[in-house]
Image (cartoon, rainbow, N blue to C red; front, top):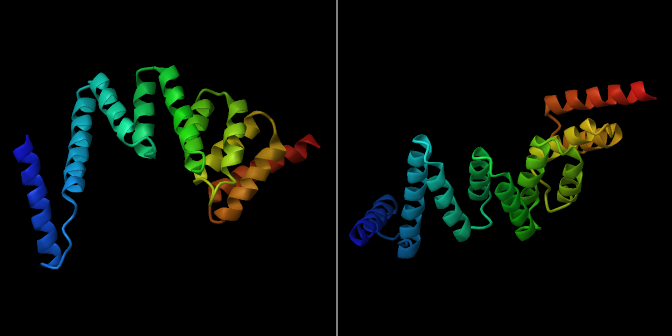
Length: 192
């Protein structure tokens, strides 16, 4: 195994030198080894997933989350796998821990909020996503979308319209968002 990893690191170094000439700074050997190990884990996870060996995929993802607890993709992959086997409590605990460990990342709030949204626990979504709108540059569009939809499903139409407007200010070319806002405003005008 060690010879295999050394050979891969050597090939990577050779490729770097070939691509950038002799003046290229060689990558750190440990970084190269980890890069290949991570790629191998991902390929193996795909193989296990395709044959339905979900427990092994989950164990491998748990290992990766232990190494990279702030990696959104790895955490959400593990959460998705836990939900696939209907281990709802473990998935939710993972999402909560991820958010609590990354309070300054607006995206860290989304997996937990999406979980509640899919479970139709709409009342739990605003408490998670409203604060995320104020962090840094704010979250990606999906946070705005599920927040606005949650408000609408709770019949809090003014809040839904407010979130759609905030989102459209950020993404003025999002036509579906404009249609959603128009629908909510139509409902609002019918209530008056």
